[in-house]
Image 1 (cartoon, helix red, strand yellow):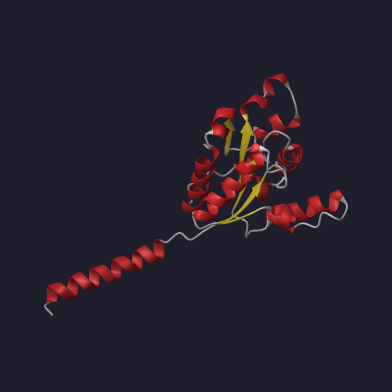
Image 2 (tube, one colour):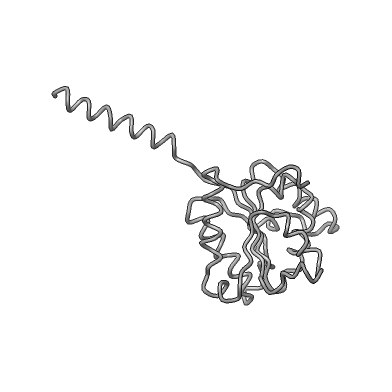
Length: 186
C-alpha cells in the first residue's frame, strides 16, 4: 500500500468521524391539539399526520394526554401536563389549534406564563380566528408572545402544509437555529 492510499484512507476515516460527531440525533416532541378520539375531525387527522411525519424523521413524537391521569380533578391533570412539558427531556412542543379544540386554546393562554414551556413551543393557529385588534379572546393576545407560530388558512390545512412546517420547526430546533423568546417578555 503506498503512502497516497494510506493518506486517502486516513482522510476518509477522519471525515467519517466528523460526520458521526455532527450527527444531530433526534428530539422528543409533544404534539398537542384536538381530541385524539375524533378521527372525523380534520384537526385530529392533521395532529396524527404531524406526529407520524416527525416520527418518520427519527424524532420521538408523543401526545401528552396519553400519559396523564384524566380520572383525577382537572386541576391535577393540568398540572401533570404542565410538569411534563416543563421537563428538559421535552425538546419541542407543537400546538395545533383547530375547529373544536377549545382546551388547546386554553393551554396556549396557560403556557404563555411558563418560560420553560413557552420558549420551546410552536403554535399552528387558524387565521380566521386570530383577531387581536377586535379584542376577541385571550388566545389572540397570548399568541403575540409566541415567536414561533403559523396562522394557517383552511386551504393550507387541506393541502397538508402544516406537516412540512412542523418538520422545519423540529429541524430548526435540532440544528440550534430555533428562535428563543427573550427573557424580558416574561
